[in-house]
Length: 220
Image (cartoon, rainbow, N blue to C red):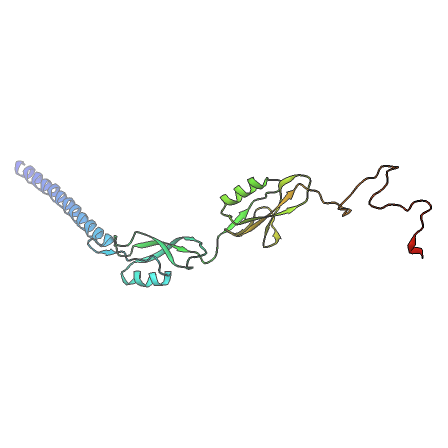
């Protein structure tokens, strides 16, 4: 009986030891696989220098980047009248930095069309207030057109290319605008330039009347 008990304990102990060895082996195998996967995923040691892209067109930049295992991604655009449309003005990461293959290079380009900006309603604003607000929105080319009215310096309308804009209508950013403002001088509806009043009994020196007994020579 004693021999059987010792044999059973030995077998039971060997099973536990085997299980522990199997667990340890599986753990080591998982660690090795994880390290291998990370090495492949991060492409350890395979760094690529970012080329200079500023000034190039997007298709030219893509050709250069694809040859090095990189790709371009446009993230923003800015409009400038004197710039070449579609040209790259900024890049991230900068040229010369080391990156992994397959990395995206984020670029900013010059837009081909200007950004559309809403022009707010400015009726009854003072000329100074309206000009300051438009300048803050990027409209710096402002001109004024005066119309006669009772009060001076109030905005009546905003024009773009001769057309009156509605409130919050969008126009190209930086476009020249015309402010229609009041001049404070009312127009004479009768178109009388020199109006004067002659009191009763006062002779009119501008249009003298013929005196009594005077003979008009033109009659003869």
